[in-house]
Length: 325
Image (cartoon, rainbow, N blue to C red; front, side, top):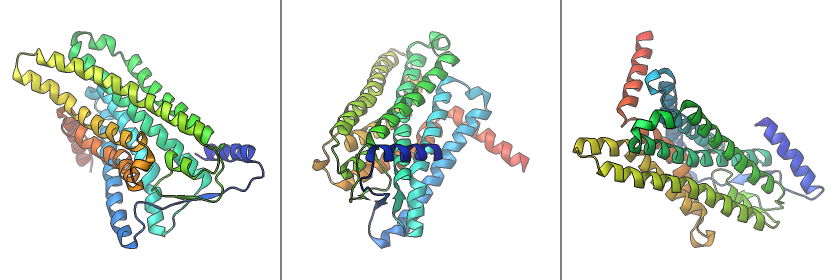
């Protein structure tokens, strides 16, 4: 992070020369009313702890239980790590600001926060598509599952997801640091997001907005198309199963994933792909809370606590810790 901040400062100086620019941003948070701050602090602290503990247990259980060393849980562990990182990128700073009654964040820290928020959101997108493909192979081609989902191939899919997300974040960051921020430095948000930052710039943002739309639309469309295709094939395959129990078992392995897909993609589309003039700023905040805080918090409950194998692994982990005391 320190290296990234140093790079941002050097690049900023090269692009902006002697022009006067701001050195920090003011994050207004979710509410300007003082009586709401204590409630927000307790609420988001609770959600943060639940997210970190829940997703941390998922990663730990998958790491320690050899029965869970398969593609589905490899992707789930990476999704849990991305969720922990996503909420840790925004919520702790917001909690510190509430506690210290300070709303400022330095320019370099703000850009770094924006960079990592893009990384983790894009990674979630790509991993959701990868997990859908995994379920497609498992249900539609069960006899070829081991051949098609080889360990090296699964690791490659995971690495590609993280690599692409960093490339996309770096592209947006390099474009953003060329913009000037003159006098207006107030962000009506609880973290440094790309869209609000573009609105504050006093220089032209047409290229940035065009890249945001094209790249953002691509990141949404390709994983979603993979998810849609996978579930069309899955539904057709499940309907051919004769036993009711078999149909229910197949659908139950996909229901959790589909629930998170609808919540995650629905909120991102609502926040980023409708003109900002058609909805108030509060809608942006609500959407951002949903996909950066609520969705990561729901991951352990939706994906894992309804999963018999994960329940067993977590039970073993807890019993092992209790027996060691």
